Length: 87
Image 1 (cartoon, helix red, strand yellow):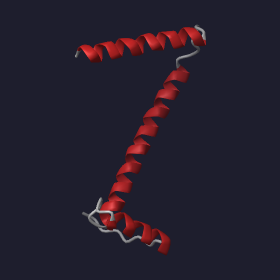
Image 2 (cartoon, rainbow, N blue to C red):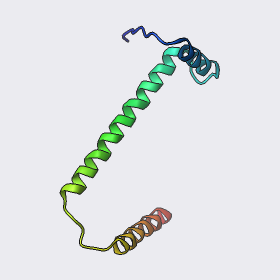
Image 3 (cartoon, rainbow, N blue to C red):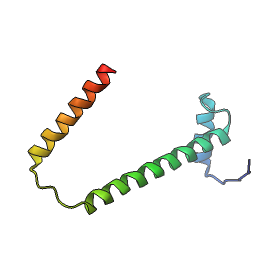
């Protein structure tokens, strides 16, 4: 595992130490690794969402009203719930 030294203002250092004191993290490195891991996950999720938006925009306009679209989505959601209950 690589080592990295990071400089923090006193207030941030105290925050990190307080997070470790809660017992959730073994040390400050564990806390920083958790922050980096969460940031990586959030960045990946944001990229996937942007990809979905781009794909939707590229697919063109929908020829149905908002009410028709909402009814269609509710029907799909009800079907998914029904499948989950029967599983």
